[in-house]
Length: 346
Image (cartoon, rainbow, N blue to C red; front, top):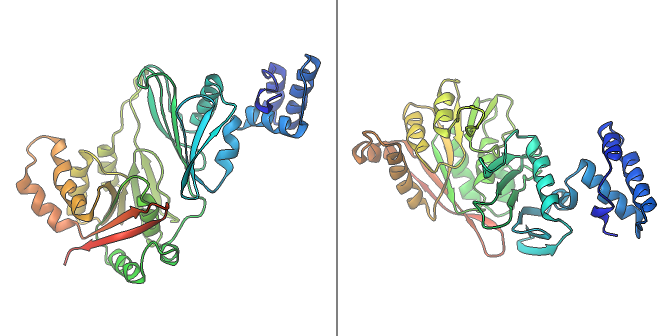
């Protein structure tokens, strides 16, 4: 007997679990399975499987609980891939398409975001801060595509990054000096290069300051008492209006921040960020790029997506005057990360 399929759990077992007696519900489910003619080869494994179905995330529970796994992705039923210890891994698991749907719906409950034919993709934060991304047919060809970027439970400081060799002692002092002087910082790099980790480490230096952060999906963490975290909201079929990143940046300006942080600048919100920085409020943001110079070029071009009367004659001197430092993060072939370049305005 496969543990996760001890049986189609009875309504009675689920009812008991909902009354906060999951162990009793697991026993009932196994007993009913045996009475129905089934067998249990390993009762401990069967109990774990049933509990994961009732109150956990089914076969994904063990992978979500493994602190060494950085990211999990699923391309089709009964297969799982994950990144651990600098390598990509593949395993076959007992996870059919219906189980995967149930697990995803459980994961989405915390965020309140929806996933259906009218909204065939979703970005959402999990309870622990991990990021969930799901795309379903007809956007995907056949199967649900699921990615979970796990949230690190050990928030790193700049000193931690220095001790791990991510930044040198010289880079540590450069970054700390820029933060202390209220400089505007871009953190650039490719996907999984450690941009968010670097941003969070920098934000940890802002003790005693008021921070307002803006992002599509909650990923930023700052160990600050005076911090307001804002997240975008998609529009809904029920009539809820969209709250885009541009609006969040404008909202942040009205909240008396000492610093603003924007996660993943990639569109017209770059214009609102430049206006905010030009108003004298120091900020930090992440941006996808292959070098520090490319990050600056993107800050000159992304605001053009806002349309209107935006011109290079306005953008070039504005970027030149407000971007003080670019920290470029790089992911090595062995999975380690390092800051390969720091550009700063003289």
